[in-house]
Length: 282
Image (cartoon, rainbow, N blue to C red; front, side):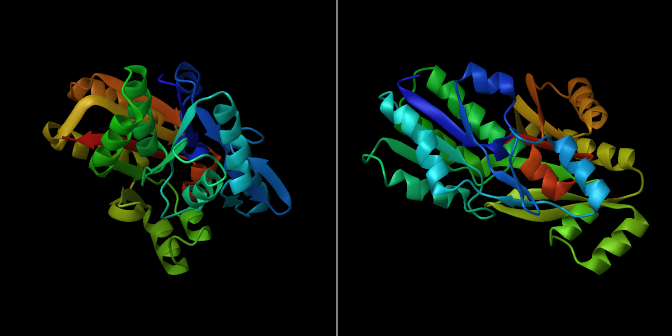
């Protein structure tokens, strides 16, 4: 891969098979319960987080990797004579990118390149896989970086949240909104624009009705979507994710559907039974 080592943080939620296939190094974020600190995807699972929340009623905090964490992660690649390309989660919602930049200053100029994906989870997966495949094809670093930076604004994601209490506890919605939304069974659809999380639409009623609405919206605009690759993510919502995959196979000509599990960091903010679909606009 042109002696370029690809790095991502754990919010990319990359499946292990892709991590191994493309030799991607994952730098984990931290999940904090009171005084207990866990590494995302290493010391704790999403299911364990939800179990703890149900038992204690308290959400965990999340924290970015430190500059020292990044320095240690990068050091191995540099010592091996490789260059590093790190594709970060959105710098608008975490200090992850900034901490990686601090660590970069400890290494020779030009050996480490950082790219702010401006995305999270499934939409970051889309960009990391894009970079991995370009590197596999033998593209040089400048070409890969230019491609990612020119495509990241064309990546969209629709995130269907099943419960408002996690967003509420995390400060994303007010108490009144949470109360009214819960009573009316409102399920918001979030998106990411320019690195920021926005509320795009709300569905009222049963989860299946909301899920059908999200997928019908995808089908309605499928002619404007690149049908080579679509990414579906879920947090303990395998049945809903399978429904989305089957819906795409039945109603579109999408060539590849990548299924991922939302990790501990993203799951701490969206809650269980969340699903997301990420795609590239033409």
